[in-house]
Length: 528
Image (cartoon, rainbow, N blue to C red):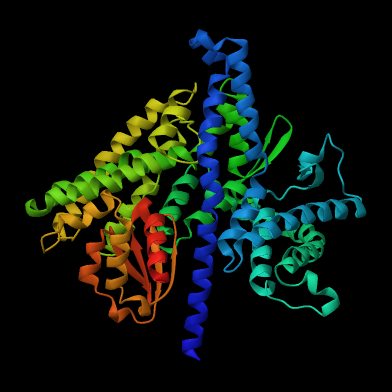
């Protein structure tokens, strides 16, 4: 009985982690398009035209505005992106048909909710619909449940695809069996959902609003948020927390020029991309909202991570310093340029969990000054490119205050980590008791993915010991038949930044941004 409970618990945890990873796909689409949208938004602002007179050209402005219109289409359909992303990430079989079914489900859900509003006499007038949580979705006036609607439809489509993609129907209906049954069943199942969700949504809305004060407190809310965000990284749940605050009532509701926006991100999108720095809403809302987005992220990626990397390099052993330099520089640049911090965090998380706790607490504590420095840098990510676009190209961002606060963060994190590494003799990169092989780091540098995969398979116990392989944004996630067969010492020869066992017979191997290519090579090798 106990064994069964442990398996169920592990299965539930794995499902939540998979769900969190599935949210990365739509977010990955939003980030680069948001950068382009940000550039267009900045270059079309009157203050920017005054600074750069060459922008005041009809043809050039037409191109810029047109690009902004095209990119805005993506942001106007965020829930649909989430529906497809979640369906793809959560489905185990026939991912393509699951994505198709999620679109069918999303359209059906919105029409049904609109029908419910009509039948109950609660369909608002177009002038007031935004004030009661309604709006136009793909030409349909319906309840605006934002990304949550897409997530629900994505989950429904994924489960339907896994359950029914092989279903056989009686001969008269055989044509509609198998894969074709998935979108049909998704359509049917979405109808009762469309009548139930408006009732449940009203209850959940009141509940989320009642607890939003925890994360949305004007003075300490963003600090608590960043503590939780970093603490959830080992479990892969930080994406879930971010999505809840960004897209639901837990992140607050904002009335901007008579229009209601639910969650942080829709409100920021409106102010950043449409209203601009000269609008009163900028000064009123942006300093608070962006502390949960890029401003908070940039403290980590542009200042804290480089500080930790420098501390690791300065404390590395002379015999390993040459190789350590390449490894540390890679993980720092991965965060600096790509907003991926896991490779560096995992380098000390499991060898010194107490240091990771201090790291999380410091991330929250040293984020608190964002509340009174009036820093207003959008957008989602925290890369150096976002700093240049959304910080330096826009007016009234107070980006210099972020640099000053970042310098304080850099100093604190460097001193704390250097002291902790030396005081507790932590085996961070470059402090291994054995001499590190330079060839391991060169494998990734030279993109020799088939060789990496071959080493990984061999040191994981061979093909027969590998049950299932998945990957997230930085890690291979491998189910094993017997974890005792893993050669932990030699697995490092694959060039990985680290590895750990979050549960029995399941290993995470950290390759950073190269992980998808390593996964592809490993899949090819497993087929042979």
